[in-house]
Image 1: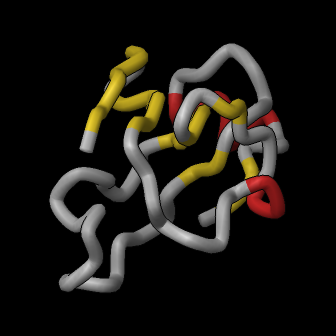
Image 2: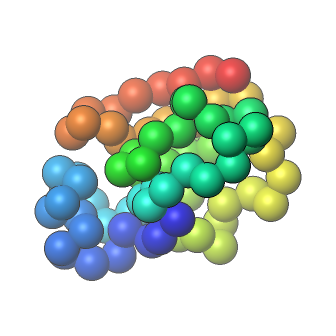
Length: 79
């Protein structure tokens, strides 16, 4: 993952704001989020809490809901 903190990455994702976490790759095929989170997604919130940078991402993956930016639109995912 990488912070969405520069104009090039923001432009590449189609986002207007420099916030969230860009998913560069999904590598754990046994992860609970495999198939749900895709390369190129931008994670904007986890369980209703806005995520502005990598350090704000929870260490534990007890995720119930995600707000992501995918294909130039917001999506809400519930697990």
